Amino acid sequence: MAEITLTNCYVKMGGSSGAAAIALSTAFSQATISYKAELQDKTAFTNGTRRRIAGLKDWNITLNLHNDFASTDLDKYLFDSIGSTAGWVQVRGTTGDMSASNPGYEGPCLLEEYQPVNGSVGDLNTASLNFLSDGTLNRNAST
Image (cartoon, rainbow, N blue to C red; front, side, top):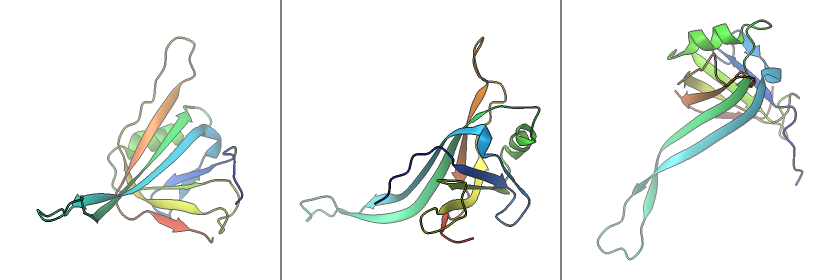
């Protein structure tokens, strides 16, 4: 098994996977994808151990970024995206093409919060973005 070090993640966001999007991997310093199923308890009185069944799936993508108002349209995009139902995000382990060894995880989502200014005196102005699912998270292994 080949391990990877996250030094060159690919981050892209836009209106949909086929619509105009912005790829701004250089602005981001951390990416986390969380994918889970809600487990429902189906334990009956006669069971001696908890029993469960998978319910709805859920996912979110958290991205940490270095805010930059001058060089890109990222701030405007994020500011305008709060609560928008047309959001879409894709994250890959590297900036290389999607493949079996570099899958892209993407899906429709809502941006929950954006902090355009965040920090103390002398700090780097950063923001943490939490994109919540608004549809299926897809794992794509080809372009």
